[in-house]
Image (cartoon, rainbow over all chains, first blue to last red; front, side):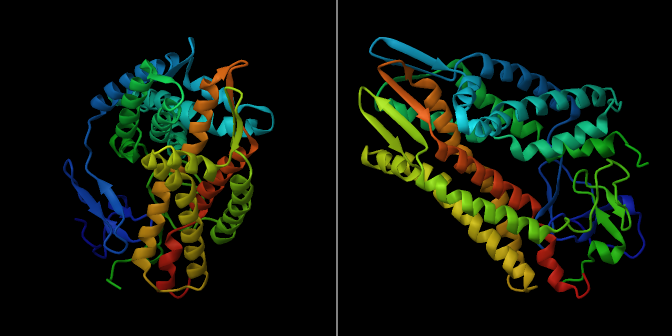
Length: 210
Length: 204
């Protein structure tokens, strides 16, 4: 738990609740510990669950799963001897249809580009952080990661695939593809690696304010 | 309320991008170089604008078809609600409920909650501040699940492409529906939850 501020204290040890602007003195947290704001009950900070090395390993795994999820079809169907299958990219393309192309951009961002950029940027900052260095363009990468987070919607995509399977199962033969399994694992990894936890690199690498 | 100081009382301001504690007069975070504001600029006006845009798009999103199905010389157009009803009639009430929650309940909750938050903040209400704070975090959490229907239509339309036999195509309603999701996400992002607590202080 955080303690409230004594009158004189180093500012760099302060932590501000982003939901209500309360100021606390930060205290080190152990694994699985969380600190909550007394005023608004929002989470202030969590103990780190993974080391930088583990994060890097998971990012590399996520990169490989991303390739699998995008190269292999996620669903295949057959109807009267004809068969068809679909990858994530093809389903985004299906929306790029005349007037409604704009929505294809949103869907493409949500299920392909945002996760891809997250993986690439994380790999870049983590591979340097692994040897204790600050990656070139670190500030830009970290800012981009913060802004990408709300637009990465793999968990919604996974649920969408499952709903599509049930929807079509009534009229055709539907088979989940390799891409679906890769997608499911990728979703878990993205949740683990791309959360707010990555902000700790600012402190751990000792990025100096200019 | 409980004696915990606010950032402005300590002469500091939070950087939302990296969490750095900046000096109150800073315009840019010295650590990550993002713009820093005491409160998100024009938060209430912007949130209203995105919210109203979302509400306007919500009308065609529900009235216009989202999907055109031609299955074995049997043509039909589905709106979001008729898609839900179709699932219900075919006996899969669980999927019907899921889509109903993602495409109807979630956007409506977002409209209602953001509207309530905006009105109470404009009136500097001290009513249920902690609960309103929780509500805001809740809609931030559930907001993007509304994209579900857009992605289902995309997948189904990409899959069912058997020339002459059966095809499924997306229709204009899905564009409006996607825009509703994007607008409400922007609305939630431009709302500043710290405004809820500003009612406690006199001079913000």
